[in-house]
Amino acid sequence: MFVTPLTNHIQVPFPSISFTTNALCEDIGPETQDKNLSEVLKIFSMFQSILWVFTIIQFLVLLLLQQQQWFVNGEEIVTCSGIVPMKYRQDTISITDFGGVGDGHTLNTKAFREAIYRIEHLKRRGGTILYIPPGVFLTGSFNLTSHMTLYLAKGAVIRATQDTSTWPLIAPLPSYGRGRERPGGRYMSFIHGDGLHDVIITGENGTIDGQGDVWWNMWRQRTLQFTRPNLVEFMNSKNIIISNVIFQNSPFWTLHPVYSSNVVIRYVTILAPADSPNTDGIDPDSSSHVCIEDSYISTGDDLVAVKSGWDEYGIKYGRKSYGITIRRVTGSSPFAGIAIGSETSGGVENVLAEHINLFNMGLGIHVKTNIGRGGYIKNITISDVYMENARKGIKIAGDVGDHPDENYDPNALPVVHGVTMRNIWGEKVLQPGSIQGLKNSPFTGICFSNIHLHGVEGPATPLWKCSDVSGTASAVSPSPCAQLTSIPGTGTCLNSF
Ligand SMILES: *[C@@H]1O[C@H](CO)[C@@H](O)[C@H](O)[C@H]1NC(C)=O
Ligand SMILES: *[C@@H]1O[C@H](CO)[C@@H](O)[C@H](O)[C@H]1NC(C)=O
Ligand SMILES: *[C@@H]1O[C@H](CO)[C@@H](O)[C@H](O)[C@H]1NC(C)=O
Image (cartoon, rainbow, N blue to C red; front, side, top):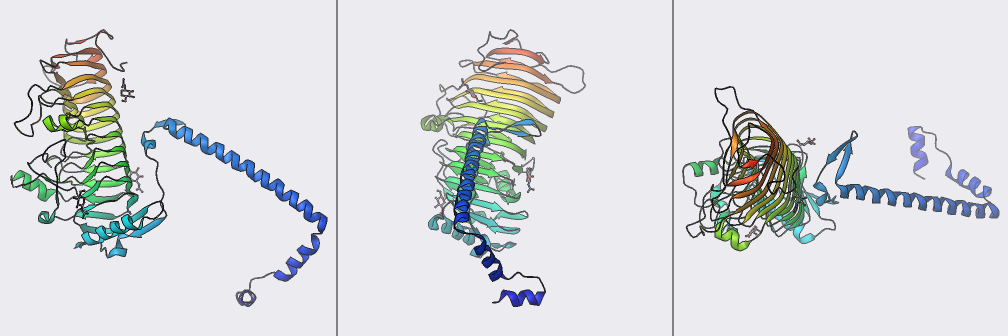
């Protein structure tokens, strides 16, 4: 009725529908209808077999995913990111629907809290995306909720307010017994999650900006009353993905998964000035199954540091970090690239770090613990590391870091056993390294192979310094200390060459 005049109007040929359908009906007699039915059935069974093929393909893909290997240009790309499957959500809300204004001045705390309240209480099937469009959204700290994706568009910035007086205080972590740097409670992280699951922070490389300089200055001027906030912290949480976001200028540690499991952090960029205090990149803490891959980190402290609480508090809480993979990470720092500790009272084991590129470092690799820590560091493998321009290549030390208070047990000695390092190449490394164990708890199973740390031109090559340590060394230059025997198998080397 309406179509024909319209087609006439826009002068497009339009077939008469009544004519075509009549002709079709005349064509199909009773017999041909039966034939048609069998045709339909044939097509149906064909469709079914196609479905089967799809099911088989799906199964194969799942199998491949379980193998955690991808093939790109015929090359095998190993990844641990399969431990948390990516979730695609239907329901999307924008921060602007809740009055969010991205002008860099308006405070959006209420908008963030209301948007997340809506996600928490409306419980859409499959969860909800909170979309942050391009613009600078200034806000106070806020809590995330389960089944949500915080999605930052290209050019989106979530920026922390510098009004520290409004910052919420929360209880200290039980494995620390107090704030990490000040007694008492601690400031809540800028973006916080407690007891959550199925949370994603991702997007098109938008920025989460902590504007940490006010906090760094309070630290420098010793006017901090409580421990500075992390930029992002997940506590007691699982199935978390953080990807394709730039994190910058954290007040304190940048990403802090604690008492959490199944956490994937990949394709992130973490930035803070080299002189910013305690701005660690990623600190998996009393957490398990953490996958950190394909990221660039340049900060004022350790790039990745695996921890598990400290001294009497960490020993009592007893929650270890294990199953941590750190792969294809590049960065720069006046402290360490890959660090284990120094807070290791709950134990740290089964850590693999590989394909790490470090430039302009204080230290390449730092395994550190302390008297009074108790706990252990076991089965650590670090391989395929390139470092350029570092004060020291490798340091393993048993008496670094401070104590929460004077009540630590000086007889609680940490155990360090099974640290394998292989395929490490350094250029312009001023000192190759040191391994200083504890007299009453010597480090064992320290296995070095194929480690070449080249110094700078100079009169004498500095040597390794070792004490209270046993293990093996093969193809290490400059030549390793005598405590590491050159005959493999004489030290107790866990998963050695
Ligand atoms: C955010 O979470 C913390 C820690 O779980 C809690 O103390 C605080 O009340 C929460 N804040 C809001 C606004 O819900
Ligand atoms: C975001 O950054 C990651 C890591 O640097 C990069 O691989 C990816 O291509 C970027 N994505 C976009 C949309 O720019
Ligand atoms: C040592 O850690 C690796 C992960 O880096 C793990 O695959 C392996 O099973 C662990 N070995 C033992 C004996 O626990």
